[in-house]
Length: 153
Image 1: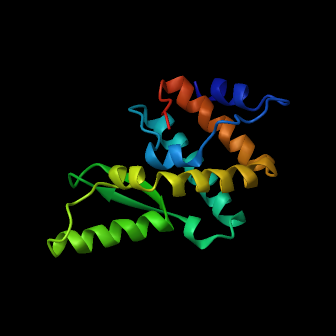
Image 2 (image 1 turned 90 degrees about the vertical axis):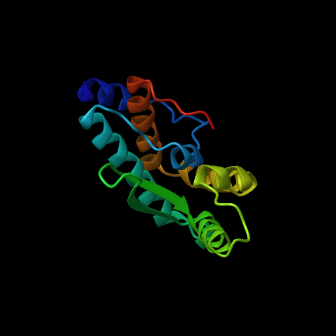
């Protein structure tokens, strides 16, 4: 199954999707019950983020990934740009002090929609000059399409 996905994604002359947004894979990381697809999809997303970080000169858009668990047994990786990590930390401090309601990262993504649009523009500028990022985009989109996981913005 993976070989068919990558044979399609590796076709020469196939342009990367203009609508690809790095913010979408941050908000909706790839999840699959198929272990091989999950492993490969997560690996590709991490490679794309690492490649973006390498060429990105704006510290506020540096993306950091960490593993976490909500139930103690199922671990998942969550990646956020620096500006969102700071917002999460501020919210947690304010919540502990009773000054603010606790907000999930998804809620903060909504609050920082303009910053995410700017992140997407910076990403797109870098990706337009990077065959490697364009290839990773195609592979990520191919895996998501095969698994039926196509996140909206």
